[in-house]
Image (cartoon, rainbow, N blue to C red; front, side):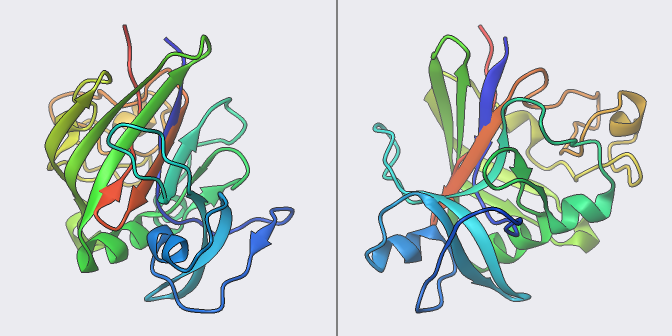
Length: 223
């Protein structure tokens, strides 16, 4: 089933994207929301490497969603090529107004300093929506392969989409940590591939994800 996949976090703004300015330092979209800005869009947050621009989804989706998510990943229509090297996934790439990846280093810096949740939202072309939530989400340093940690699953119809990847290191076609060189063998984008096989969350679907200070949003489903 083809779906929309979305994850939240941070990503450098590209030319042509409207950016809303902020007069104080914010670590994520929750801080921006707390400052009184409640319109979804591109905002500037701070990281250890300096200012970064991210897309903030400020509107609540209802159950298990209070809004002001920081979007870290969105896949929808194949507009952006995700078959990229390690450095691209480390720094982030894509189009803030469409498909993009926020960057592993930003995710590590953010989740190593503060507590976050992860939320995965999926939507198919018929408008069916499902989600899953993880009460704890973090990404280790580059020295540890940007290893993924998720726990505290809450079902919203999407199943345990990320549970299979808990404890996995990130892999790309030019830097394999899966033991199978999944990205290169199957010409796939970077991901936290399972060591035992090349299963990848979101395969064959679109995606979009976001985070709050204690919350982040992930991706795919099937029926």
